[in-house]
Image (cartoon, rainbow, N blue to C red; front, side, top):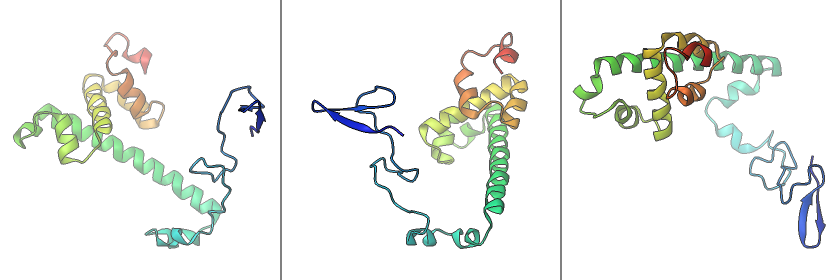
Length: 162
């Protein structure tokens, strides 16, 4: 943990020498204020739908459950991407009155602009380079990473990039 010291009107971090670097003082300092709060028993958490069912779980069961949910999430994202590949191939967005797959993703599916861009790029990469599916499916390559390299991926370098 970095401790700030006051010297000549300026604060400086003692561990790395960086000036004015803010390091949260508590692992539960979610707002970066330095305030230490015990959020483990706050009343507001009881108002979250589904939280009561989790409160009775052991730590092991809770952590195991989040792992299973993450895998379900990965499979769901892959399924959405495969659907987008086929919707794009058929150009179904045009039939529905959208000018592009991007517009379909934002207006019809409710994705943010950045999420829609990533999904369109990845769907089109999957269509052109089906070998990208396996590393995406196993988590070796993330949606964001594949979207980032989609513009430079070619038949000649796809395997190396992935």
